[in-house]
Amino acid sequence: MKNRFPFKLMLASLLVAAGAAMASTPNPAGGSTDAQIAQKVVHEIRMYPRYTIWDNIAVRVNNGDVDLQGQVSQPFKKADLSRIAQKVSGVRSVTNEIAVLPTSFFDDRIRLQVARAIYRDPMFSRYAIQAVPPIHIIVDNGHVTLEGVVNNPMEKNVAGIRAGQAGLSFGQVTNNLQVENPGKKG
Image 1: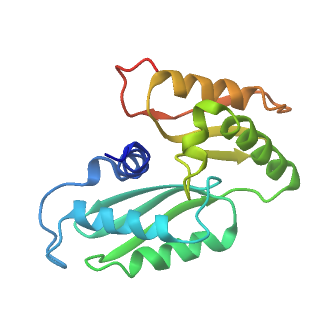
Image 2: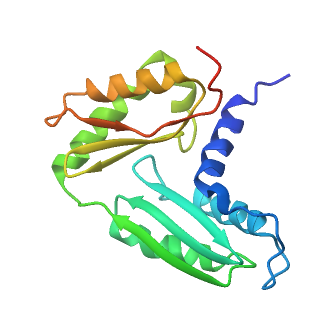
């Protein structure tokens, strides 16, 4: 039987972003539940060809009203993601609170350094082959934040260590990675 862990991990990272707003009460606007709408919006965001590991989007839905939060690396992505969410059936309105990260060569260099440091580690090779790996690297004026989902606490710690050793000028990494299986040690 084929190992479905990467697919489950990818799905879990998006469901974590959807959060507690995924209530199972029917939405009067379109008959879909908020959970179904959130899943559809998350799916559409994942299918957006310009969504990368440099972006981090959280989706919340309340009675068909979608709230987009997070960060994107390019200004045009904010508007694109809002339009994508608006087209999902059952969505009544979209509140776009996505922050656009500063565009700078310095931040781009840090993004690449951190991505190489993390995804070249053999522990993360199975993540690296995914279309959108589950560890997202957010760089804001030289400050690095890791977002997403990993399998166990050791992977979370190693990702933070690799990011910190990537030759950053500020050296501080905020590790917001979520752990899918907290009881596993590796």
